[in-house]
Amino acid sequence: MDSAAKQIVITGGSGKLGRAVVAHFAEHGYAVTAVDRVRPATLPDGVRFLQADLSDYGQAVQVLTHIDEHYGALPVGSGRGVDALVHLAAIPAPGLIPDAATFANNTAITYNLFSAARLAGVRRVVFASSETLLGLSFDETPPPYLPADEEYAVRPQTSYSLSKAVDEENARHFARWCPDAGFIGLRFSNVMEPADYAAFPDFDADPRLRSWNAWGYIDARDGAQACRLAVESEIVGAENFIIAAADTVMSRASAELAAEVFPEMPLQRDVAGTETLLSIDKARRLLGFAPQHSWRDEV
Image 1: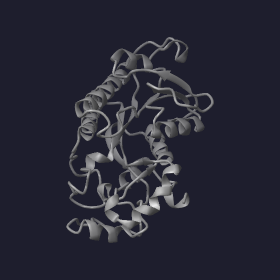
Image 2: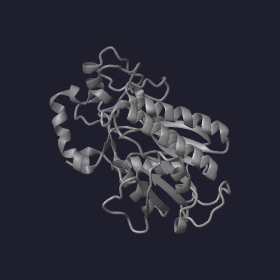
Image 3: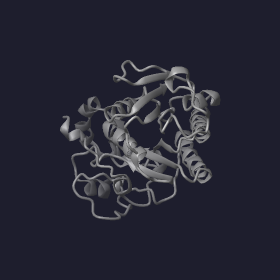
């Protein structure tokens, strides 16, 4: 997708990942509308903001079709107007609110936006899935092998990760109903900003402090890159991708850590140095994903 004059709606635009995604698309020439319940403290020049409750289906439809001067009068289903949706809005982790509320909020918002996109003729939908579908915490539910990848069946362990499993399943069926559309789920690892990296050297004291996700993370700026690459891809149908940094949060070699903490878990291939144990091979191959940021450059 050529970015010139392309309209993109980014939900959850005030969140940790959302702020980076909004800035990244704006820098790459997109006409960006950020949507959230709370306005961010700052917005990049030219970015428009809409305050909306996306658990209300009517508001989800309007966000993707017509809100006064934002898009003009665009006929529903015309295929004109919003070119792509990046959906990041959600309760972002388990344990923040009661379980049933987490599940109800996340699944309802995603259904509403998928359905609104179908109605509005938006044929490129990128949405935030989660590394938790790999079975986190690995301390309790180890994956069948490392590096963990997209090939084994999802194993949600919380209401949050179950909501993400439902989102991916919904995407599969919406893609079936819209055979010319792409619904791309990005299973983001633990999202970090540069200010977070000062704490990373302390993880070396005990490898089990961060073994719950095989020592993975993703810099928010690289998460934003993945969103853009997914929008610009020509993928049709439903596909899911692990999105993680190229390295781990640790200074020790990844193979050494895996042998110590997960001795019963086979390595599917050689792992060099501090290479991530959350496989990004599929994202590299199909999206051209190439992480640019490491915590090692910030401390």
